[in-house]
Amino acid sequence: MFQSSALKFSLTRASLYFRVQRETQARFLSKSKGNKTSAVIPVLSSNLLSIRKGNKVALIADGQTFQAGTSTILDEDKKVRRIGKDKSVLSGFIGATPEAQQLQTTIEDFVNENPGQLEKACIDFSALWREDKFLKRCEAHMILADKDVSLLVTDMGYGVFDSEGGIMAIGGGGSYVHAAAAALIDSPDLDAEEVALQAMSNTAEYCELVDTNCIHEVLEF
Image 1 (tube, rainbow, N blue to C red):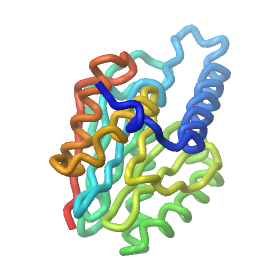
Image 2: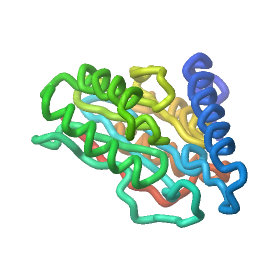
Image 3: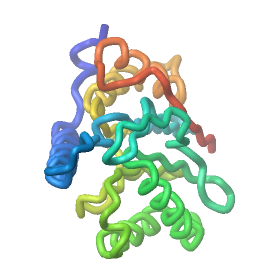
């Protein structure tokens, strides 16, 4: 049971998340008109949560990954991974799997070209994502984190956004996961990894948009 005071989080950031989700949903439904294959909206089928606390940052993803335009469920897809030459950056995605995997590869190139400058790498990558003939068709959202910053990068042209209060969450149940994390993050007994795992687990108990099948990575610095 969460305390009401702990459930208060940034309405501005939550509004952005919902706007991204709604516009992505509209895009997929528009593309699927006249297609006999049922449309699948990957942003609404999984969640990403980043927690930054103390000397750790954790990134966790839940649920299944869906390939756009099909009902194929890919439980084993690695939606969260370490990237960069020294594996010092966490990268996670929600979206159509083949497209998001291409984005993971591309962002890693930018990370390698800008060591220790994750924000610059993400800004440059975001510009390419909007302009490249192939990449601009990719329907996905990403969270990247290193020892200094956690960033949300989207395909909607909004650019790059930093985390707020050490918490960043996006997905079908993103606002609920965010609220659960906000209720836990100040607990002196929990580190970043424990907050992330417990927030996802707690939310899955009452929200059907959040799954208990999770994968996560942690950076310690």
